[in-house]
Image (cartoon, rainbow, N blue to C red; front, side):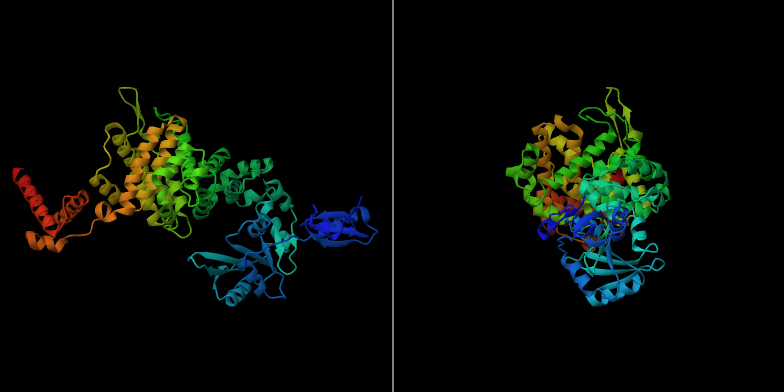
Length: 560
């Protein structure tokens, strides 16, 4: 039975965003494309005159997208495609924009770049894809990619994509949507569904993308699609390390990172990505640990996420939290929220967030516990040097993923030194001794900016270790250590973290009649430790200290 709509009803219609077929003013069929609506109508009304119309949506375009659409040539069919259309339907801000055209993608990209006074580059000559690079006010980039159809038609292009929610196109001329696979319905149903039986086997990196998008949007993965993911898991190893890395780091930089990693494990993908992580499964630990090493690792990632997205977030309101432990975080170190935000706003690589790198280190911080596990005479499980060996393992994986040398070094530092904060906390809790000025200096000397990451990881590590067994007393001790370290790093760096240089190598050689060599470096470092400890306050003290150290060294050599 047909349905007749007036203009007011049309704006609230369940057909909004769909193509509908009218016969004598009544809706008789609908579809995701004009052709689908027409075919559906012809099945029952083949002798009648059928009119096809798009039920418009009240789109609100981001300024950059609107500006881009305004400069597109009027004689070319240009479609916004993929995730950008999905994001429009979900009222999300898309980071980049992809456009599909019948031909001359590179040429169109160059034309748009000139019109926007932006940079241009050929992205893929074989696929006729050009990129417009927009430099934003904060120094970040937005990319506009223009590609020739991957197939004979636009619909062929869309059907060849990964998931139905991304198989959407927006006609930039008349603002209509082409949705051949009912992706808009899946968006409303919050479902991730493969476009075809071969979507995942054709490009296995799509498995990671589907898991990531499910976590990011709060969607579920449809049952058949999950099975297709499992069937194609073994092909992940055929994908380039760079593409796998990019998906993993986007996953770790987004919401529900631990759930995504667990999903990769359940789908049989993780063994082809980072098999060394799975060795942690079932490796038991002594109290106060309440989990095996693998479950603990995922719990740490969860707790790190909670820490960064709740009490240390810039807009956090301590009055609105019911979590006493997060309230204590706000009380003890909440005044550093802005500094934390700035810390994470400066990644080591513009293509990967600082947060994702920290979460990657959290995944690997205990990776060598299985191989270092032993039980001592008291029956307690020990993991000596798991931090040192773990630093080597994380570095190897980082290099395999072709991370930058700075990123590899940062990961090594975090994993290598992740136990130091726990030693500070144990001493304060058991002996009432806070970290000394010398200990603070050495902590940041060895870790640098990674010291901030180590503090956050330690807090998450504690909660991931003890869970609900953690006492307020222990948590307060950890937060006190965190406060002491952060105060020194951000409020008094010239006193304990990075004391001003009082003398240099030339001063020591001149005043102590020394020749260039290792002794000079050792003396300079000893002087800086003395400054950090408050024992050396000026140049005269520094030189006298160096003379005394040199005398002790010479006496020691004579004794030998």
